[in-house]
Image (cartoon, helix red, strand yellow):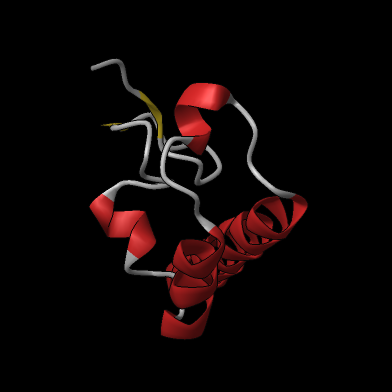
Length: 83
């Protein structure tokens, strides 16, 4: 089975093709968005390379949520460092 990299921005953790993200990043995504991604997932789409627009939209929402959480975390760390 081939792998691809986690879709979280900057993450280089390999994951199975049917999964969007590594465990760490996936569980940063709010439950409602995780459910939306799985609701739109069609088994085999990663093999056929034909995900639906609804799946891609849900995945982009998940990626954005991780980006926003990581940005907030980085900003909080920088505020602490600058004290």
